[in-house]
Image (tube, rainbow, N blue to C red):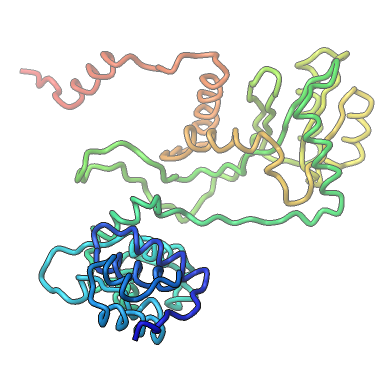
Length: 367
């Protein structure tokens, strides 16, 4: 019976057998893998039995099992045979759990996304693990760096001149033209008078988190903030308008032109919104030393002012309940003053704030 030999092993099976051979917490799998690898190297069964400490009959049995059922026929995991004992999840099992979590939920469970409970149910149904707590499943995923992430949308540009415009803007960003100034411009808005959700610090389990009213009727109209981002000085500034027609846009360009010497060429990055390409606007810009760099259609991310708007919205508008447009303008102006270095971070000292808070919470009752 020494002529019993293992069948031809595939590359995937050989890689898996080598992993099993290195297992220190599961000597059964390690020895079974050594038997198969020895046999594939044309080592006799009697010599294999001597090396691994098995009988020749058991060596032949392992080889027969592998030839008939593959790796699944020789693998052994204690948590499938032993109950009511602490669970041990070997590296290959955790790798498989992570692989399942990163796979398409639509393909595996017919739903749009996973949850921990649904992932656990799927793992148990597929006999990847016999049972696992939600907390331990979360811990294993975190060890592999798997966390919940928000999905994002992306729209590819359909502009036939995309690469031409892209390279032109990138060359501008890379090197400042001699005698010129680089400026990114765009509209921020429309600005509505409405409560906005945000974030705030709160103690764990605290019920006193800021609340904002709900609105259904917004009768205050909208405003727009025409903004400019100076790449040379790093300043962000602009003007507020009630409309954003070609007239307002031309007035904003004139405001922008007055801020810099007339001998300095303004290289302006902007999108191809209708008011930006009006004939009067183009004619005036050409005669006043302004060059336009058009962002490709559906590629506003090329305009560096967009990332400035993210911080502006977060720190000036989010978690607020302004009642008038004047309050909104004051909040944006205050944030820009701090951002541009025109004021310190504090608008009120801590001691003054504490005195006001305590005087309001403990009013003095007159005799």
